[in-house]
Length: 121
Image (cartoon, rainbow, N blue to C red; front, side, top):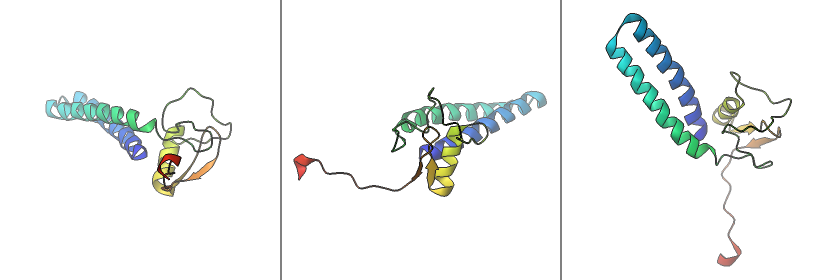
């Protein structure tokens, strides 16, 4: 879900800013209001993304891969549109796996069963 929200948020930001600039140049008030709603939607999605992306961690290095961290990336980590997070999000959506930009470990996305605690056995 966080990967989808990140991709939607990037597209929404680009479209909203483009519509806002076009509305200002063409002096169209209705289009400017639509752009404002797009920017507000961007802010709401960014808040939801901030809450959900912090739980998406690499299973090897345990670093959140869809949040902005000031940690140094691996020297061979690749980007999409200049963003390591966008590459991870697109890999999750289209390949169902991702390569961690911090440790360069490839991980398949699959649901793993929860471990039962010793108290419930």
